Image (cartoon, rainbow, N blue to C red):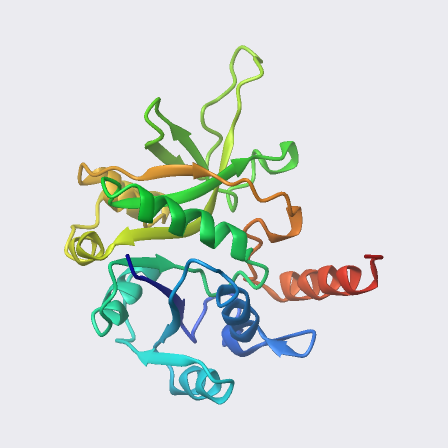
Length: 250
């Protein structure tokens, strides 16, 4: 089964204008994401889906493929769905454009599940949450049923450990995989109150009665677990992370 990786890359951002082209230690963020994504072994092709000619031109200047999409998509997944129409692949991966440290191994984990489990229409990754992140609204939590499907995603702490047991709490990592036909369906689904309230696009799937299969990542690289860049402070943090990696002993 053929797999297409799509990186949605919107130019305008409320918190960091033009962040896709902001340099992180000398390389624009979109280049760092693209280079990480193309290292995934199970992905046949990687493209960038953008609403801005500046991003398209830059991606093409580094030898990549970029597709222009409509400017006003409500979510990154809707942008991915539009771009994927132009390509003949069985499975589509949504690789977040603001995660410059996305781990290629994590991309392959999702790709492998989709190739092996034809009954899975959509899948995403989780990891065990750090205690320091449990109450951060920017860190999305997920509750999982006994069949490895998501019950709910929230910015709140779920499940709430009322009895102080050693219950495992999972953090959502924003990589998604879809059977192409399901991705087409997603873009036609109604946006519901839960998606609007939490501002979490994956809730559209659950609200409309469909399953999201959950994969717990085996990647052991803590720096690469979905760290996203949305502010200038996070740009500086990313540069510090790169500096530490370049000076650490092999």
